Image 1: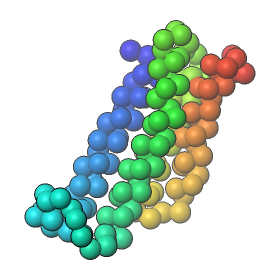
Image 2: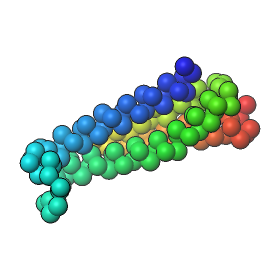
Image 3: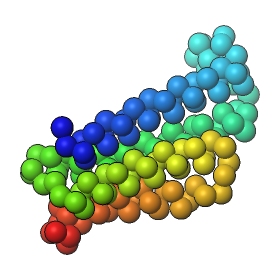
Image 4: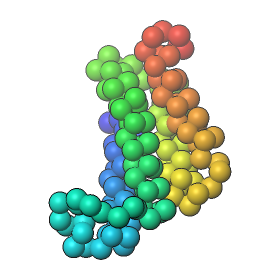
Length: 131
């Protein structure tokens, strides 16, 4: 498996971890009975519960940009130092982003930019802008 595909797998597993954290935060804030039911009329989420939802949504959005590019590169047999670096930057940026988001640390936007830069590097290679 290429490094790019490995980073996609790791990024997907990061989403699984984030969803698990989100579920635990919801159970802690709302209770098991409320979360097991239809979730109608739930009270406002706790600050941390709302933050976990935002980090999951944000990571999912990042993956929807990253994954098709990695898969397109794999199908086209395109892999070079730029696509590898881009995939590694995406994953590292997303890990740092998630940690910063969950603890409320202000470095989060910079980590987001690193992940987006990695995604755009792969796109640039596929478009022939980087070789």
